[in-house]
Length: 112
Length: 114
View 1 (tube, rainbow over the protein chains, first blue to last red):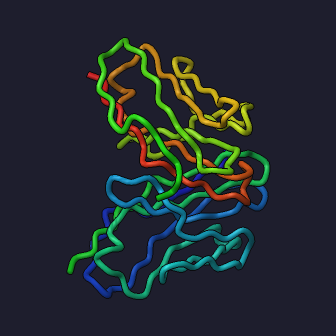
View 2: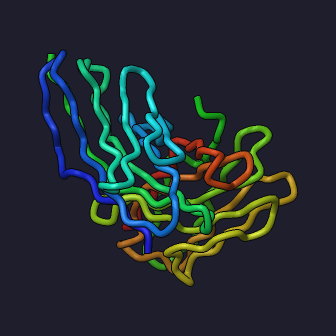
View 3: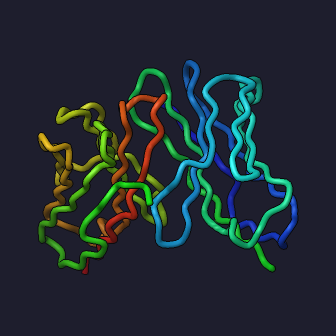
């Protein structure tokens, strides 16, 4: 079945540091890929998405590129802020099933 | 604010009891999803409804059931509760219930079984 693997956290960075959170997936066909973010006490929010190979999703300074050859969708940000502290979930949705599959989440803490 | 409303926010109950969690989707969204989030299992998909009909089923226990009503709100019923059912239960909604329609999550119901 479909699955998503993320780097284990927690990840702790200083403000303005460069962020990478690795995500790889296993899926049949051509899934759509997503990053969701969960702030403390809240539900998940869509951060960005990519629906086909080589697409780049971007939002709020975050970027991720859909790499079919490496089955990856790594999340990057050039300069993190304290307000980026949250749990980040990589997810996929295939074109045959109707449900989304989420990775385990990676907790990011940004220190001032 | 995602527009998805879940009630109650917190629920504390004893083993063996039954509870009902409620979800109102965003205005215009036809599909509702239920997820369970626990520390050791991560975010697990339970079930999806589209316009009142069950569309997909995930790792939902037989003790759990759900439905989506004509006004599109949904309820998740958990019965014969066990300590291991303690978790955050999220509802999410989307317009079409397909991959082209991202999920919008509510803030969850935290269930504690004692």
